[in-house]
Amino acid sequence: MRSMGVFILLLTLLAFAAGHIRNEFALILIGAVLLSVLVYCFAAVLVLSLIHRNKARSLSTRILTKAVSVGTEGMLFCSSSPDRASKRFFRLPGILIRYEVRLFTKDGRLIHHIFDPDFLTKGISSFTVLERGAYYSSADEVAIFDALGLFRRAFRIPQDQSPRLLGVPKAAETSLPVTIRSGGSEQRQAVNYLRTDNLIDHRPYIPGDDPRRINWKLYGHAGNLFVREGEPEPPPHSRLLIMVDTQRDPALYTAEAGRRGVDLLCENALAAALEYGDRGMDITIGYTGGDLKGGTQAELAAALAYPAALSIHAPEEFPPSPEDLGILILALPRSGSASTALDRFLKKRDAHQQVDIVFLYQGEQFDSAAETCISIYGQQGGVHARRLRL
Image 1 (cartoon, rainbow, N blue to C red):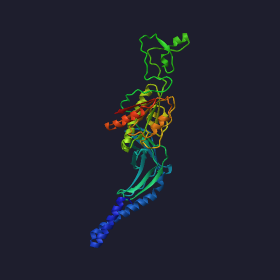
Image 2: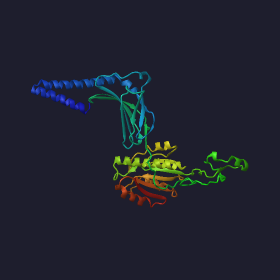
Image 3: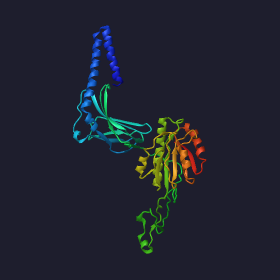
């Protein structure tokens, strides 16, 4: 029995007691009515729970699209076992039957979606993904309860431990106004265009050139491949690791502010990944407590759903970085110099590996902490630290 049920039970007992003491039939009648409501709700929920126990446990759901952009709708499909698919739940007046999906992130965000399994269009129910994150679920529930919320019986539908939904961040509208040092044997910060009006000028073919610009007649005479000048050079062979430091300083950030701060880091990390990917760099994404992930733009965006805001004292580590990658780390300002995942990562890295750290934040109140971070980390060899208030 829930709190409302306890409250009504107390009113019922009070009405009977007052009616008996004052010898007033009206109070006794009120007590009888309240008691009948309690008895009906309890009996109806109990009976329907016994009748629908097997059907409730036969229900299951799956989210149709795992990666969903923040602010858009996710869709799930609800189905039942074949022998019960065509059967609807038997209902009693005032008794509700609902399927409840609870999805949560590691840093406490929640999606709570409720629907009636008998009234879906083609078995599909939609919900809005409001916040970024990798959403997990230990179990769904099929709940049978009365409309007054007095009694409730729930059947658990177990789920696996993998994320069921990825709330993918949207890229920041503008990319970071910083120059990043990439890794690799052929480093180039921007695509170099060879501009010429002389269409007779040629240069040797380099893998990555557009095959349509190859001069095949010249190949027939010289035996080597050449392309006409005036075309862009091939993209640089360079590699960049973008790391999101998800640790927040409790002295500066509340849990909610930390989550919003990590969202800011992920949005800017995605903008940087898209920009430098378009320049021809091989982009890899990493974050505190996670693994390194690369791939297409969509896969990089999905990887940035996973970072979850953690306390700066959490025993999580950065994933190890290959030595031939340039590194860009996006982090929140912190007030002290206590050993964190960032500090341990910098100590373990190769001494010749170049690292750019950008402390991103919103609000003047973090200026002092950001300056402290620059003075601490900017003195380390191979590390270029800066702050950026957005």
